[in-house]
Structures are given as structure tokens and as C-alpha cells.
Length: 316
Image (cartoon, rainbow, N blue to C red):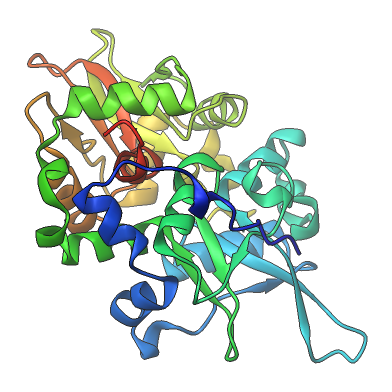
């Protein structure tokens, strides 16, 4: 298990309303508001569970990742090895494009992404600022909170919900607009070219393209390059050997069948403020918002990592 050193708390910062608020809060503060006692039971899987079992659990629980453990020698205590996401499973599938791959153990999926290469854990006493640093600049989308009771998984969305509940304490940063937010995000993470795919390609080809890219989602476009949908590793949840042949269908048809419909992508435009983006993320349970121009053409994308990074950007 790897616990990242909480050294970032000492970084020099300009005083600001939102930074003072974030520095004054802890992981325990977030958990007390966004993780009701009835929802705190950790969903996990043994390292021997198969990809197919993991896809089923992720869909049934409506989650994107699961902590993976192995039993200690006494066969009672759990030793957590990694947090495996649906993207890790996709990258494992990319190694062996065959339905038999779904029987491979989760142990083989760990380490496929930077996030699952080490288990990042925090304590309830760690600062909210520290966790937001992990979420925005260290490739983590969720962390394991170690406490006296059972561990709890804390996600980026949990932190966004907490910030939304305290938006009245965050100050003028909430008035920043989309272009500024995207510019600062690109400075932090580097420029990633937008990736898209034509709606006629098969779902299998689409997922393989996603597995080999550096982005978390692909824009699905028509022949005029208008965005008609999006594809992410999330869309693989529920995949099993019986449904494997569905991957040979056009990606649009696959999305319709797996989701129940082809839902329009969630978008934002130049005039959207940080406050409006936060509301959209929380109300729509979104993991990204596509930045589009007046004609509907995609100009960029804002992820939860980008959003959280804005609050701790030293230049804002």
C-alpha cells in the first residue's frame, strides 16, 4: 500500500477565499456531509474475481471503480492492493480481444493506469486541500480513506458535492468562465488533442481506440463532425461473454442498447461560469462536460480533475 506524503500542504499560496476555506476543512468534514452512514459500506472484490464479475458489480452498484484485495494468511483480514477502474479493465481487454479475456483475474488489471499502479490512501484528518491536490494533479480519481472502522472510498464527485453545498463560502472564483478554466487546465495537464470517432465504426474499434489514447472519453461525431454522443470506458460496464458480440455493432447502436438510448452529450459554452459547471456536474452526475461553440462543434472538454484543479490553482 502506498500513502502519498502530505507535503503539498506546505506549498506557498496566495490568500483567497476559496483557498482559505479548502485549507480549513478535512476529509472527515467531507465524509460527514456527503457519505451518509447507510452508504458507507465499501464495495470491493478479491483479486481472484474475474473481469466479467467486475463489470457486473460496477454496473449493479453504478460505480466506476472497485478496491481489489487479497486475504491475509488468517483468511479474515483484507489487504487492499489497488483501486481498479473500468478503464483498467478496458486496457486489459485491449491486450487480448477475445471473450475469454473476460475470465482473467482482476489482479492482472491493476497497474494498467497510473491510478491503479499504487494504492493511494488518506486519513480522515488529512486536509481537503491535500485530497484536491491528489485529484487534480496526481492522476487519482478516488482514494481509500483508512479509519478505525471499515475503509471508505472517497471520489472526486464526493468533493464536488461538498463544494456545491458550500458554494456560498467560495467567493468570486465561481464567476470564472469556461475559456479561463480550460486554459488553466491545459497548463496543468498539458495540451491533449481532442479525440473523436465516426459513428459508423464498430464499438470494438471505438473501445480499442479509447484504450490506446491518453484521454478518458471520445466524442462520437457524424459525417459533418457534429457531436452526437460520447464513448468512455464506463460504457463497458455489464459486458459479459453472452453480450460480447454486441461489440461488433456500430458504436451508436451499441450505446443505444447498453444505455437504453443514445443520450446527448453534456455540453457547456463560453459564458458558463465555474458555479454553473459545478451545478451541472452534481445534478447530472457528470464526469466531464464538452465545451462547444455556438454551432455545436467541440472546442474542448472539462473533467472533474480540471474542475477541482481550478480551486487550488496558485495563479487564480
